[in-house]
Length: 116
Picture 1 (tube, rainbow, N blue to C red):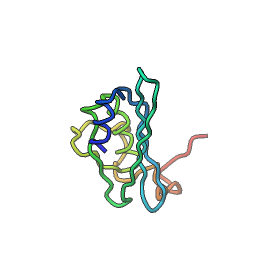
Picture 2 (cartoon, rainbow, N blue to C red):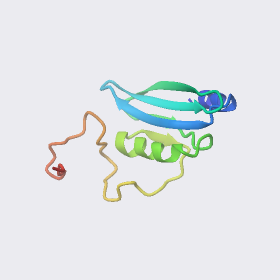
Picture 3 (cartoon, one colour):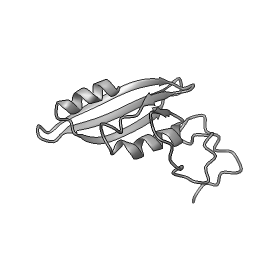
């Protein structure tokens, strides 16, 4: 992933539009969207990660905007971002062992309160 995105950055894809993850049940999907402003072109790069112990290397050295996206993937999906420096959690009271955007998340847990 890092090599692919590095190659695109060298070709002028200097704007990171989005990074997100998707839980497909059997695996996690990653979606990176980068944009070449000068040529008005967009590229979408996808990858699969195993649901058990998913990890991917950081791209923050390529795109500074990756910071928040990678933090969200880490905390909401449990994807380990290799090469990232530890930062405080986005949700400070979160236990960091359950991932709310995973299909396996236990919404029925009485400790979680749904907002009306």
